[in-house]
Length: 400
Length: 176
Image (cartoon, rainbow over the protein chains, first blue to last red):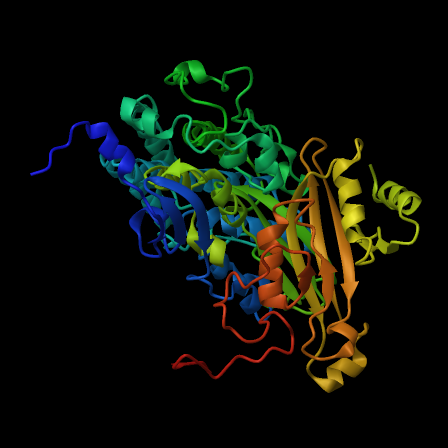
C-alpha cells in the first residue's frame, strides 16, 4: 500500500496535455450556430478559432436578382432579433440612392419603431447573457417584456419576428388606432422591470465575478478590429452613428435629446439612477459591455417617449413605399446605421435598372466576433461563454 | 475636408499611385493601383489630419455580363472593383478607396487576380478579405490565413462572380 506524504507533490506531478475542444455549432451558449475550436491546456484556453457559415444563405447573391423592396424580407432574416433596424438600414440606403425625402411623420414613426426594436433586442441580449452565466430568472423577465413588444409590432404589421415593416419610401402601414397609448403604457410598465434586472444582474456578486475584469477589449483593439455598437462604447470610445452618422440617417434624430452611453471619467450619463460600477470592473470588460446595453434600454425608452409626442402632432403621411419595380438611379451608395448590435452597413451598386447590380451587407457582429480569438487567449474555459455572450452576436447576421 | 482635398493630398504623396477619382458621385471615391494600396492605406490611417483608423467594409464588385449581347452594349470593359470603405473615428468622416483589377490574373481564366492584403493596417481586413476571397475570388497576397470563411472549405467557384454557375450537386445534396 502506498501513501501520499505530501498532496502538493502529487498536484505538481499531474501533467496536462494540450487538448482540442470543439464547442458548437449547437452549443446553447454560442448563440446560434457558431463553432469554436478551443486549444486548451487543462482549464486554460490558449487559442480560439471561430468557424462560421452554418447559416450562410447567400443573401447578397439573392439581392442581385431582386428589386430593393423585394429584398427587404431578406434583411429581416439577417439580424432576426432586430428586424426593424435591419429594414431601416436598407430602406435608408435605397432612399439615399434615390434621394428621397420623407415627411417628419414618417421619420418619427420609424424612430418609435426602431428604438422599440432596440429595446427588444437588448432585452434578449441581456437575458440570454444571464442565461449563459447560469442565471435563469432575468431571461424569463426579459422575454416576458419582449413578448409585449412583439405583440405591439404584430399589431402594426402582422409579423412577430420578420417584420418587413419599414421599407424604402416609408413604412407599409400607419399605426393602428390606440397603438400609441398601448406603447406608452408598456414603457411605463417596463421601467420597474429594468430596475429588477439591474437588481438581479448588474451588481449581483456572482455576475460581477464572472464578468468584471474578464475579456478586456482595449479601445485601440476595438477600433482596429472594426468593433462597433455597445462593444465599442463598452471600451470607452465615444461613437454612436445616431449622432455621428451621415445626415440622411441623423436627420431622424434631429431635435431629440439623448446622450451617448459611454464612460467618461469613471461615470456613465445619468448613472446615479443605476447600481454603481463595481470596483473590480475594468473599462472594456464584459461587465461594461453589458452595462452599456442596459443603459441603452433606458435611453431608448426616453427616445420612444419623445418620438411619440412628436409623432402625434406631426403633419404629413407615414410615407409611400416605392413601387415594387421602381427604377433605381445609376450610382453606388454605402450607408451605415446604428443597429442594436453595432454599425450595420449596406452597399448598393445600381446600373440604372430596377434590380441592383450588387448589394453588400456589412455585418456588425461579423466584425465584433472577429476579435474573439484575442479576447479568449489565456482565459479559463468557463470564461469563453462569458466573453462570446458579452459580444451579443446573432449568427444570422454574421453568415447572411 | 472635401473629396478634392483628399485627392490633392494623395496625389502629392503618391503621384503614381492615384489612377482616378469620381468626386461627383454620391459617395466620392478615389482609385489607387494595387501596388500602392498598402502604402496609401497606411498613410490614410497614420496621417495626423486624416486618421482613418477604422475599416468599415471590403466589397468586390464584378463588372461582367455573361450574356454576349448585353456584354457588347456594356459601358465598361469587364473588370473587378475592390471597394474599401474607411471611417475615421476621431474625425467622424468616411472615405472610399477603390482598386481596379482584371477579372483573371494575366487573362488566364481560373487564375485569381491579386491585391496586397491590408491586414497589417487594419485587423478588420482579416475576415473581410477572407470573405471577399471566398465569395468573389480575389487573392489577397500577404494575408496570414487566406481560406474560405462562409462557404465550406471544399466549395468550388466564387458565388458572387457574375458568371458563377450553381453546382448541381454537393456531397449528395441536390442543387436546383
